[in-house]
Image (cartoon, rainbow over all chains, first blue to last red; front, side, top):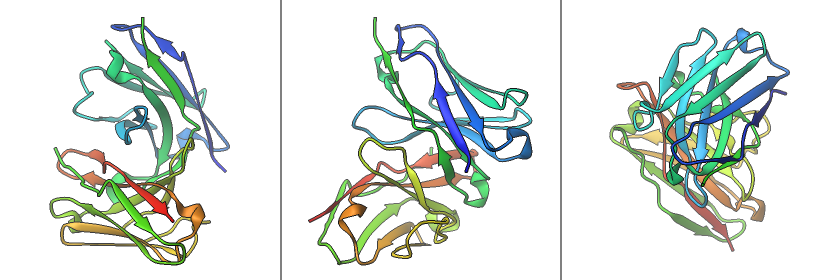
Length: 121
Length: 108
């Protein structure tokens, strides 16, 4: 059973950078699959942020692309999210998840528990 | 950008069949997935590749996709199925993952 665990600050100041890490256990990122970030503002729906492959190839939501960086560290079996210049609208629960291949119709089959990040001064 | 549209809410009586739709331009030409999210929990994949169920998902969950609409059907709906449901697809033109706005299923 693949396990994912998000970690990072729960409070970020406006204009600063939100940084989260997702630690993966019971599965090696190097073995394959894509790894992604999804967020959910309080009381709202799911929003895809981006995916990364083990090689470092990334795919980003166009609406966030200018502010998002996703990276992978296979040696630590984890991947990370950086979202710059945050505002209150970036307040959300952030999930990390695994997906085999979106193009082949595979969904996100394992999810982390999610971490609430609040943007406030 | 590609958009998926879901009804905000659907109500069903216990034991009846719940149908949740997801509309998008030529969605039938793409694969669809469905997630169930109960209050305070992470989403759970219930359907992938239009109609396949992951291990552990009850048989009462089924999916279809044709034309511009993907459909999640829950047969013999149970109280425990009350949740938000999200459809998801992949836009081949942009390599983007797209989620629908979500549908709140009420079982009463």
